[in-house]
Image (cartoon, rainbow, N blue to C red):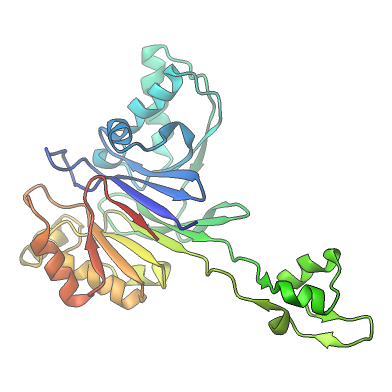
Length: 302
């Protein structure tokens, strides 16, 4: 199954009638990961039929309100419907105090535990399972900010069924062969792994670049991903404004995608001044052709 990304919000700063602030859900083999949680995220989950109760991992890029103000409401709703499973939150350290202060003054004791994983400087592996590796990496914004990269774990090779019969391969040898081992027959003949197997579906990857000034060094962290989401708050004629506010323009995001040799770029985090995205998309595509524009409710297979 392919990875699936659903955009719950792709606007910046304040909600509009067309766009909610940043939030998205990544489906990795029916495990759901929430990336940022702008205002109204839980309503967007209901609107676009996202299984919010199945999310166990939340990634918050930084502590500007349009990236986390929906979190208190979402977590409180999970409490009210009786959730008991652990929630993992990967975030800047002050977020724990922000959330706990609100629950303290409302007299709320959550029915479920939260484990906070504080983001640290540099590039770091923050989650690793049998099927997925998640890394955080630094972005350059007005306050500490991080991006996230999601990589499927390398898959085993697929054994050719006809070779099992041809060489009388016992069941206990199949796992080693799938992991790259050669096979020695009863007569001592060595059969190479390349003859016995073929490559399975290549692992997929996704990277999320939240708020950041144009920074070419980001390319090394997102190199070669199948899909890159990169903020594109402004069009090129507002490049100076983008620099002043530590944001990126359409063409600058495309330059990162080009430099990183990604498969596809998705732009988003648009300023509310843009009612339509056609012109933003054109500017990005002029630099990196395989670019698409995010919109609330968009689901993309990676």
